[in-house]
Length: 86
Image (cartoon, rainbow, N blue to C red; front, side, top):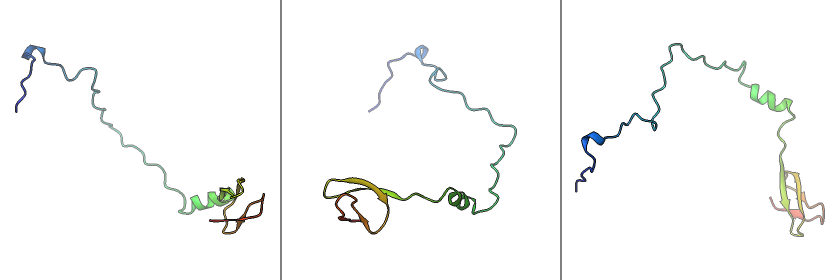
């Protein structure tokens, strides 16, 4: 099925109107690349200088107490002393 336009040739819309932006101008000068890091271990050194990651988690005990503690395989509730599953 072919759809016929209800517009006459004089009513055609200008497609370069307000809805479209012009193309971005081309750059005549090359863009500078960011400098390479001095060494490949700079991220690791920065993390170590900051004290390393802080691995803490929020735990909810069966007694209803919610607490934050270091991530470990043996975490116990400070309220009732029950061991927490990890």
